[in-house]
Length: 155
Image 1 (cartoon, one colour):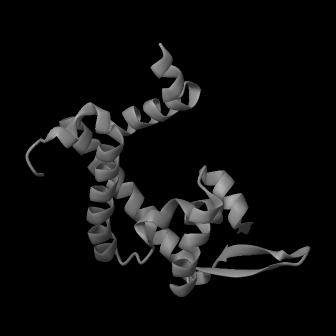
Image 2: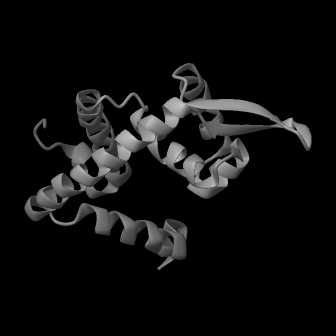
């Protein structure tokens, strides 16, 4: 990592969390390749939600994930191209498109399940070195949900 700069200041917490996310994504891509996983790293939670639902629209997946509808729609072409999901019209409403895992998608999710068990141990060892980043992130997200920065800036 480059030497500490003004950009590492606490006021740039969002930039640092984005840098952490990017670093994890880059390093996870290598591990996925080694494990034969073709799922885009940033689509794992989407496919997990789809597997749990069995079938869902982009809007339903977005609500489940707490993400924007647009973000889910943006991820869809790659998932379709990779053959991980199918998309078809809802029989009750032709305007509504439903996604479903393909057989290949289910196989990839099984590989992801195996990978997840192993990576959890890797993260636990990392947290011995750095502190439990996962717990801190969850706690921080919940605190900001309960009391946003705007409210905190007033006091």
